[in-house]
Length: 440
Image 1 (cartoon, rainbow, N blue to C red):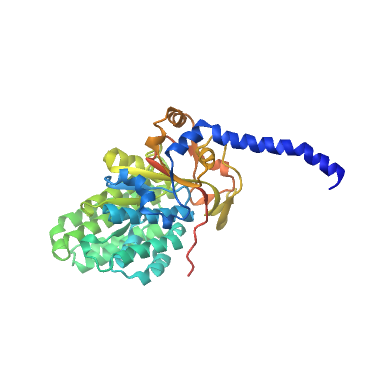
Image 2: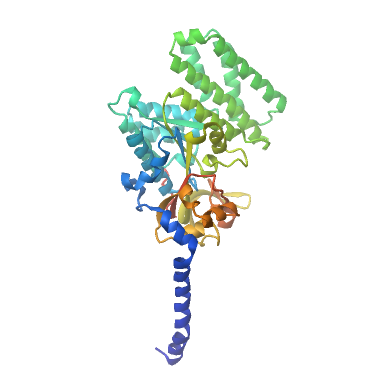
């Protein structure tokens, strides 16, 4: 070592030790971190290997009819695998029967048929051919749906579990499904229905291009008239099918109408009301009625499941109508990779894996959670806010990192407020990996 390098090291060494000491002291003496350590429930790194004992902290939610499972990105492997493991735990220990997804209602019916019939080998092909969103076309979701299919093997219908989409943004499948049903049941109004259903599919296909408000209202009136025809001919339709089928196809027509409303307003960039989340909440409650005495795990983004009344989100609607029968587990992360569509200004830079290289913003929930000695854990919000220091923090301007399907490369743009009422629990991964997309 050169003499000048030796003296430089002597100068820098105390600085290094002081910086390291300050970092360690900060972690050890911060009352928020100490409080978090008292209440966090540590989890092993691989969610699919979580033992039942590790998940017992969510037993306090088991009596709820719906448990919302969020995600802080639409492309994180660990979030998807965690929800797979939690659903399996809820099925095996508490009799949950439905996994409701932020996915198209019509597409889910094809996939659910395969799950009911344990046609496991068909799952991947159905996902690739029927699913609209790239977000769910992943190996993680494939493994979940295949597990559901195998779980149903040799079970009677009453004990089988179901996959049902609750979203309402497309009319790719709803018109055809309805036409087939009305034809098979010899509906006397089939020709009348066919004309309306073909029009609904066409305007959706062209994304409401050159479709004005008068035409939109006219089509909605036609759809309402079609709904009246189903009601007037209910007995005949049930006689030629079953009560369960009749109610299912009434719901298909209802989702078709929802999709027209959501699609039209979105195409015209009219955002006076959050129709989509209101309708998704209605569809979740329809499942409760359709699948009598069932319990539902609900898969959607953090923003949709949260009990956040600002913006009319699905979770706030469900909380208002179900109260204690709706519980919510949010997810968060601070480092690692995720899949998302890249955005550069107004330009789409394509679907790819992104990596968080910056540390979380100071004072955010992510920054505090990232300083835990445990990299994966769950925490009940009720336990956390039992201590005034955390309760006061949630009452202030606390923020959490969360993104959807699109990422512009600037993580600071994706922090939003979090209140103590948004979630009943949070599961935190300090680092995640990108979801694995299915390939033909």
